[in-house]
Image 1 (cartoon, rainbow, N blue to C red):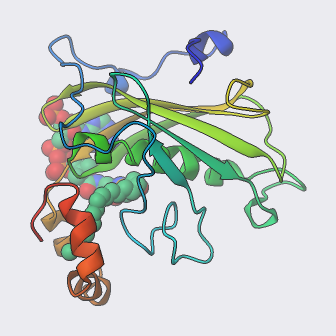
Image 2: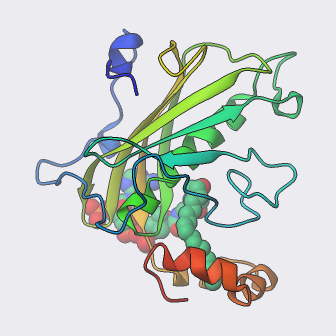
Length: 208
Ligand SMILES: CCCCCCCC/C=C\CCCCCCCC(=O)SCCNC(=O)CCNC(=O)[C@H](O)C(C)(C)COP(=O)(O)OP(=O)(O)OC[C@H]1O[C@@H](n2cnc3c(N)ncnc32)[C@H](O)[C@@H]1OP(=O)(O)O
């Protein structure tokens, strides 16, 4: 992962909003002792997820890996396909935001908590043509109670290429009941009857 500050790579852009600025008593994130090892593929949290699900034909099929180093980091690659266009030959911004959201969401594998996106602020710095491989990196910057602060970049032309998109996010920790109470009953029933889905949920230390 490149170490330059993506904010510096995009001079003149405003800082993240106050809601995405960790309070003074926020703490550094802790990589869970049983988290996947650096370099390990994380897999999908749900087979039908639009971002990462292997069983979702229209999805992004994002495959994230646990990052190197002491921090709570992941990296992922996303190849922009013709189905992802907004303007002719260019990726749709919402699809790029999804790729950032999914990469940020996969940080949960390393924290071993379940969380959902509360806020996602995205900068679109350079257009991303169809066929491009977007090299995504995400990192948890701070934790405060249930609030998880994180940041991500997507680079083009290689893992150390220029930043094309970036995001700051606030994820909020939830219990598995969040999904059981709010999800459509047929998908929830199917997920709870699927031993593989139960195994995936246990990787977040939940007991559905
Ligand atoms: C049997 C089935 C098994 C299935 C399990 C499979 C395993 C699953 C594993 C992993 C899943 C990961 C999935 C990742 C997918 C990619 C990421 C997404 O796309 S997620 C979807 C999009 N996001 C939503 O749909 C959230 C919708 N929003 C909500 O549900 C609520 O608003 C929620 C939970 C975010 C917060 O509601 P509250 O009632 O729990 O908590 P409050 O008190 O409102 O907030 C807590 C703190 O957070 C701040 N906060 C909340 N939302 C904020 C916001 N938007 N901006 C700033 N601050 C916010 C509040 O100000 C508060 O802060 P103060 O503690 O007072 O300091």
